[in-house]
Amino acid sequence: MSVSLFNGAVMTIFAREVLEGTVIIGQYRTVVKRTPEWQEPEKQKAGLKAINAAAGWASLVAIILIICVAVPLGLLSREFDEAVGDIIEGVSKVVAAFCILQLSLKMPKFLGVYASKKDKDGVEIGLTLKSIRFNVAWNIWREVAEIGVFLIPFFLEGEKAKAIPLSGIAGIVVGGILGAIIYYANKTLENKTWLAVFMATLLLFLATGLFTGGLHEFEEVWGMTQNVYNYRDAAGGFFNEKKLPMALVKPFGYSAKRSVLQIVSFWTFLAFGCALHFWKWLSTKKIREGEELAEAEKAAGVEEFDHQETTPIEEKNSGTDEEANSGNDEENQEVNQ
View: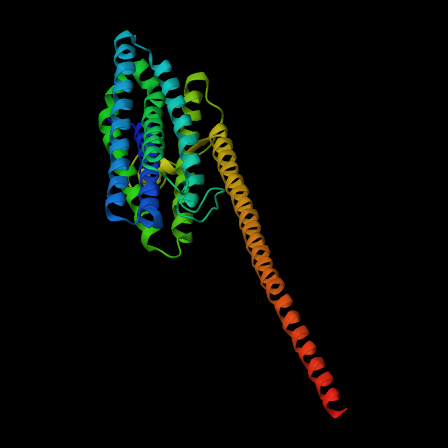
């Protein structure tokens, strides 16, 4: 069995974790740069330095841990037959599909379209250097370590681990570029709705394609379901997903040949993702309605407080004027007598 040096599922895993890591770092940098308590130049410089150092050291520790796990697994792994290899590849695609689906749900929140119960930057206001170091280090270590967890099936198979270096580099580049786009968009764009919709939709179809492809790997091992259509040879092979140009849309779930399982899995997963986005939208609507109601009640409370503060003074002044007028009348009556 020939072994490819590139694997889309591995690239997806790296891209997803790197993107989340860059977003986390970007959020903390944004808070340090925009929060009034961090505007002192020396303090702000120390905060940014703490973020970079915590992210660097956490990544290094996680990479060392991954190597310590990967080397023994690679040395102890045995040769798997093709069926086992297909199963492992199917598992990796299904896992990557749910990772990308989660990222599709998070992308609008990263761009501020979906509301969060946290503050607008997603991190706690009032950060100290100690909390910055801990929070950044923990989150970045977790993101990098998750890469190792998702790569365990490839370590076990041994031969397919050869696809990790090239696929990992590609994933790091893709994740880094997407993270930079989000960071730039958060700093410059006023309306980020359409960017969020585009990226969330793109990621949802990518996740759907991975999920469908993963189940198809299982299908090839345990028996194919009935084919519903096959037009790979139509129009001189133009629609064949294994050839350009249609190979470019294959990662998003396209196929010129569909079995019953592929059709069911594609539409089921896509509907599931749409339902989750609808739930997120409803949650956002409720959160923002609650925020508007709280602001309205707060404004009404301030107006009522101002009214209570001014009314007694006016009444007191009015009473004083009446007493003065009454005193003047009494004096006039005494003079007349």
